[in-house]
Image (cartoon, rainbow, N blue to C red):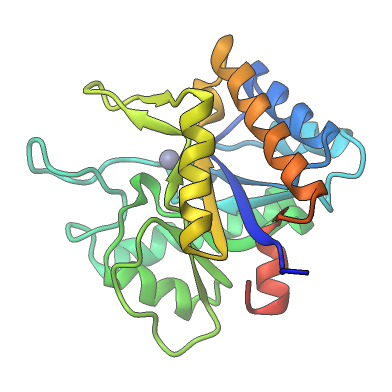
Length: 241
Ligand SMILES: [Zn+2]
């Protein structure tokens, strides 16, 4: 039998346990779908981890990973691509933000924190990658790989499937169900791994229904042995995916 292809589900921009977060979190947990939550350390409080801990057995289904520091745009050029970590931030500034974010993630989420770094806006430069490797992150989770990794144990995990697209207001708009499935299947035809990112905040009303149908569809593929949902902490533990 063929090895199942791996799906990493990643919810971005997590800060607090608001109603939209709770709905997505409870749905994924009830359906036993492992999920990787990218939390913004400089905006997250322990209310979030308190909520998660009150839910039953979160550890085998839930990872929190570090999504930058405060998700702030530091690009000063008008109309330039947004980034929190990029050319206008010297090494010392990047290191300061990544390291205080790391400490905060570990303090808030403890064993639920998987040391993976997901740069906000999917933007970063070579300094960001070098620093994360130096600081012993196990995974760097972004879009397409832009730079070679230094000689370290850090693994690059590409998140190239987006369940939303961006409007001219730069806000995420969820794709319809058929396009969510098509984008994931396209990636899985080309690769053994699909990193799938979404914004829980954009899922409400019919968008939330579509997301749930998408997850149920993928869950059926998992039951059939075609795909497998995974946590980033599994990749770090095995040092491969
Ligand atoms: Zn983000």
